[in-house]
Image (cartoon, rainbow, N blue to C red; front, side, top):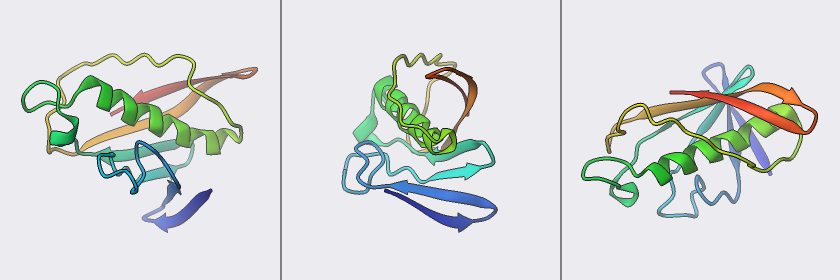
Length: 120
C-alpha cells in the first residue's frame, strides 16, 4: 500500500507495514520518506536504540535505513525488486541525536538489475 501526501513541493511516501521505518515498530527508525523528481530522501536521527560505539549509530542501523530508503525508489521504477547487494562506504562516524539526510536515486537500469546512487 502506498500513501502519498503533498508537502513542500515533494511527495511524502508511506508504506504500511514497514519493519525498519514503520510506526508499528517501536525500535524502528520512523522514517518519513519524500520524493522529489527522481530522488527519494529522508531525515533520520539515530538514538540509543541504534547505538554502536558510545555516542555513535551502529553501522547495521545505518545500512538498514539505507536499504529501506532504496525500497522507496521502486515506486519510481515501477517494479518490484529485492536487494541483491548493498555496499556502503562509511566516510565518517554518525553521531546519535542529530538529523542526517539520506537520499537515493536509480542511476542505471540494466535489464532486471537496478543500480542506485545514494548521498547524505
